[in-house]
Image (cartoon, rainbow, N blue to C red; front, top):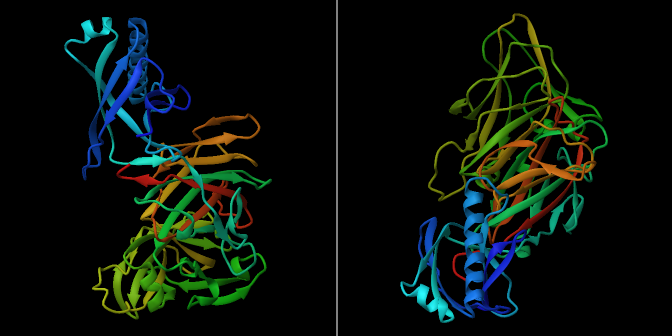
Length: 446
C-alpha cells in the first residue's frame, strides 16, 4: 500500500503508513479478508516508533478515532470513521467505513513504549468492499448528450423536445467491478408551487437504452375516445365512460413481444396520470395482465382519491411468471378496470401510464416543502439523504425515504426515472428540475 489512513473528511485523516506518515507511526501491515460475506472482520498491525511522548500522542489519536466510530454507531456524529487506502503511488484513494474498532496491544507494550516502540493490532468490521472518491456521471436525455454540471428534467416524457423525466447513463462512462453506489442532486427549478414527494426508479439492461416501453401514451390505448388537447401529455388523452357498479374493462395497452422481453423479470409500479380531475369518492381502479381474454395476473383494486392527479397501482411483474427465455415472450395486455358503487355513467380522462422500475427504487415522502433552488441529495454510499435549502444556506432531512440503496450496474445501460409531486398531490407535468449524479467505483480487492 502506498498509504493507509483512518478518519474522515471532517475530523481529518490520521496517516498510519506510507506516503506522508509521521512519527510515531512507522508501518502498517494490512491484508484485507477475502470473503463472500457481506461484512468482514479485518486486522491491521501497526508499528509505532518514537519518543514515549510521541507514542502516547499516537495512541491518543487512535483512541479518538475509536470514540468517533462508537459515537457514529450511536448516532452521536454525522460521519463514520473510514479506513482509507491508496494501493499505489498516484492511484485513487479507496474508502470503507469501519465499526467495532478495538485495539490489541503487545503484552510487553508498556515496557517497549518506554523504549520508543510499540506494536498495536486494530480489529474492526467493515463492508466487504472498498469505494473510490465520487466521480460525476455524464447524463443524457432529450435535453442533452453526456452532460455534466446539471441536466434539465421535465415532469413527464413524451415525443416533444425537452420533455424527459429520465436520464440515461452509458456503460462507457463509468467503470466499476461491483455495482456502484449512486449519489444524485436534484434541484427544484420551478418558480411556482413547491416540490413535496419524489419517486425514483432505476432500470439497467446490457443492450437496451430506449425509454418508450416505460411510458404508455393515450394514442396507443385501446378503449374510450381519443381527444386532443395541448395541455395533455403528448397532446392527447382518452375519455373512458362506463355504466353500472361492477368491475368493468375500460381498455388496455399492449406490450409487444420485444417490449415484454425488455421488461421481463422486473417489477414495476404502474402510475396512471389523469388529464382532468373527477368528483367521485367511490372510484376503484385495478390492472390485470391478460393474453386476450385470458387473465394472467389480477391486481388488487386501489381507491382513486379524487384529490390526487395520479394513481399508484400495486407492483406488477411483467410477465407475471418466469419463462425459459428460449424465445420471444408472448405479448401482454395491461388492462384497466374500473368500479364505482354509484349508479349511472362514470367518466375518466387519462393521458399516460408510467411503468416505474422497482427493482432499484426509492421514494422520498416530503414533510418539509422544497422551494425553487432547493436541492434534494441522496447518497447511497453514505446511506443518507437531506435537502439543501437555498434561502437558509442549511441542510435538513426533509423526506421519509423508502427503499434500498441506488446502485449502478457495470457494463449495462442504466436509466434513472423521476416523478415529482407538488404540495397539492399533483404530478404537474410542467414542473422542472436539474439533475447531477455521481458514482463511486466499488471493488472487492484493492
